[in-house]
Amino acid sequence: MYLIKLSAITLFILLTACFVAVEFSIVKARRSRMNQLIQEGVKGAKAAKHVITHLDEYLSACQLGITVTALGLGWLGEPTVRALIQPLFLKTGLHETVSHVLSLIIAFLLVTYVNVVIGELAPKSFAIQKAERITLLFARPMILFYKLMFPFIWLLNHSARLITGLFGLKPASDHEMAYTEEELRVLMAESYRSGMIKKSELHYVNDIFTFDKRTAKEIMVPRNEMVSLPLESGSGRILRDIIKTNKYTRYPVVKGDKDHVVGIINMKEVLFRFLSEGAAFTKHELSPYIQPAIHVIETIPIYQLFVKMQKEHAHMAILIDEYGGTAGLVTAEDIIEEIVGEIRDEFDTDETSSVQKLSDSRYILSAKLLISDVNDLLGTEIAADQVDTLGGWFLTQHIDAKPGSTIECDGFTFTVKEIDSRYILTIEADKAE
Image (cartoon, rainbow, N blue to C red):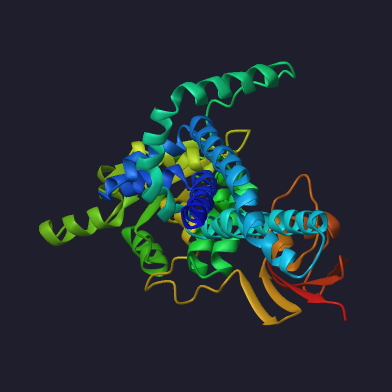
């Protein structure tokens, strides 16, 4: 008889453990992951997705199961264990009343301990670490249990909603976890620290988050650095010299000055005609190769510009300022570099990095570097309302800047290293000891 009762107690504890494990696992399991498993044809994935997309119902089913098994354990466990322990106390000569009280206390503590450890804490920890596996394993049994107990679960759910409704709370319509941008950054950083993703992948994701916050002005090639071809030149040699020196694939073509960009020329097309027809490259043959150029305001977000360039199959866009003058240009490569980092080809051997680290406290920075990037790199709090770049900020603080000019800010000494006329090229940042 006692063997049957002990077997029933063990069964109640195991059922409690199962319901607890399912409860925690379906909360932790991700719907997006289940969608992926469904596409991969994993057995039980569809049932698992059904369960985690109806959390109210199946959490109620788990709670009902836990409550019923706990009641069964309380009804059967304590009397059975007490009946086994009390004769041992009576044999020691203790009074029957004392033996009864001691056996009652010990039986209650023992049953509670076993139920909490084996039925609650252990399955909870296991479920948190193996949420996906447990959800897949128990999804179908939980669906069957829910169907069998539907009347009770329906009554419990609606009773609970009636009570929460008195406090102005409405039932959640969607339990899919949504994260803010900052939460996603934290999750990605934790995934990197745990070895789940690579550093480069973390870098790409962080860059994507900042992608839609950047404007074309922040990444453009400024007007003074634009290399253009004149529509009307004295000789073809001028054009050939420009192309030979810079080795770009595409050039804006200007009529008169850079405020009048008439289009874009692709040197591959010119080369193809030269090779196929043996034509000479002169001013008279420039116009047939000119393609229309995209003209957009310099403050356009780069993601909008990228979409526009994709639609129009363009690799270069001309940026204009608020007065209609040319502010600079942006290429598809400039936009892509905002995500994947700097891209260099065989003709970029003379390019220097925008950040040259000389030591842990000393850097050579390009004056075109954005102030926000400088703050991220150095941990400073440089602020400027009217300018975006480090060089622009320096000029607002030191209008007559020349090589050797310095500014002290946030524990760093910023010194102009190179300057071209009034245009600052590089600035050294040296942290004060």
